[in-house]
Each structure stands twice: as C-alpha cells, then as structure tokens.
Image (cartoon, rainbow, N blue to C red):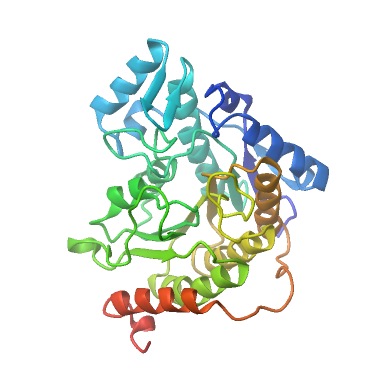
Length: 350
C-alpha cells in the first residue's frame, strides 16, 4: 500500500462560516492544519478538493422545507438558529461544501484514488436533525454520505462509528429504523444533548443496529480501547460492513474547554487503528472520517494527527501495553451487552 493512500479534504471555504466569538470557529481548522504541517503528516496526504453537495443530495436526509429555511435565513444575514447554533451570510454555501467534501472523499475512496480519507470540514454535522439545525450543526454530513453511498454505490451495510464526546442524536434519528446502517456511538453519559441511552437500540427493521455506549467522563485511553475491543470489534465482524464512516469528534480530549473526558492523542490513535483494521478486513479498506467536535485548538490538531498517523501508510499500534479499564467503564460495557446480546451472537455469551 502506498504511503500516499490517505486523502485529506480541506478548502478555505470552510473558514467562511463566520461564527464570531463562538467556540466552533475557523481557527479550529487552521490550527489543526498548522499542527499537521509541523508534524510532517500533511506532506504524506493526498489533497482532495470539496464540491458543493446538491440540494437533492442533502434532501436525502433533510427536509426541503428546512433546506430552504436555512438558505433564506443565511441570505437575510444570519444570526442564531438556536441558543447554540450561529450562522452567517455564507454559512449555507459552506454547509453544502462540508457535506460535498465528504461526498468527494467517499468518491475518491470508492474509485481507488485513495484508500482512506479524512474530511477536515466545518460546520460539523452529527446533531443536525432532518428538520432542523442543532448543536453547532447545519447538515448531517455523515448521514448525507451514508445515503449517497447506499444510492450511488449500492452499499447495503454501512458502519458509522461516532466517538465524539456528545451523542450524535441527528445521525441516530436518521437511521434508527434501518438495518443498512449500523450506528455505534461512544459518548458522555451526562453531556449534551441528553440523548443516547443504552436502551435506545433501534426499532422495526433497525432494531439492534443502534448501539449507544454512554460512558462516565473519567473514561480515558484504556477505557475506549476496552469498549472498542469488547463491543465494536466483534459486532463489526458479525455485521461485515462494506464501508466505514467515522464521526470524528475530538472533544473527549482531556483539556477540551467545553467537554472533555480523559482522552489523549494516544487514545484517538487506538480508536483510529481499530476502525482501520475493521475497514481493512471487511470493507476493502474503505474508510472515511469527518471532523465533528473538538475545541482545544492545539489538542484538536494533535488528536487529528494521531488519527491520520494510523490511517496513512503502515499501521503501527500506538503507545504502551494496555492497562485494565476502570470499573465504571466495565459496568457500562456490561450494560450494553445486556441490551444487545439478543441481537448479536458475539455478545450472547456475555
């Protein structure tokens, strides 16, 4: 595999979503790029350009009424869509480019231009519901990409891994009744937006295909490695996805100013290595990540760098030998297994 096997989507258009003094601001991207340049990672990436997603592509997830409402609000000058979510006159176009950046990343992976890709885009997406913006998010980039993969490429088993500190309630809502997308989320048990209970397992044909792992904020690198080993890796092997998408939010980083668990860049490297192995084994390597949260500027860059190190070139397992998970995390994992053992043979013996 070539050392040029990882694509990075970025464009200065993402800086034009002007949020003023909001914590989700353009410097998140520019600082991340600076960290990648300083560490040498940027030189090993294939640069991918975004495009604007079409209204019809976005409408596979979001209602036409919401799309037009957002466009009109931005044309009128922008402002606050809700207490958390700010838009400017250019935000609608930028949001289309964020979704479209992920679609171009997916195309590049499917066409073999790159093996894996990461979309360094904003605004983020995983809180965006079909009918409204929420939690800094305008369009649900990962959900739009999953629909696109289903429709353009006929992929009928897609794994979405969401390791953001906050639960991706928007992504859950889109796919809650569908078996074609397995949504796996680790998130704070007590954080915004208050969703993501362990018993929310899906409904109808999608029952069992929504796996929530709410964790205490004391969870750190070893704990997330344990969660992935005990739940994600065996379930993914049973599901055998044809594509892996990652909602990559790094706000579980221990110094994050608005969230924060006890994760370090090493922990993000552990998770990145795990999803890469899943993609390599079952999906022909097809793996696409998309930036979500992460608000400690330098820490975000370091965490993204750790992820990309695991996705470019030859994999190396990061860090020292693993230590045991904390008892509170073991209890959380046991609760997930109790809910899902009736859906997944690999969990039935636990």
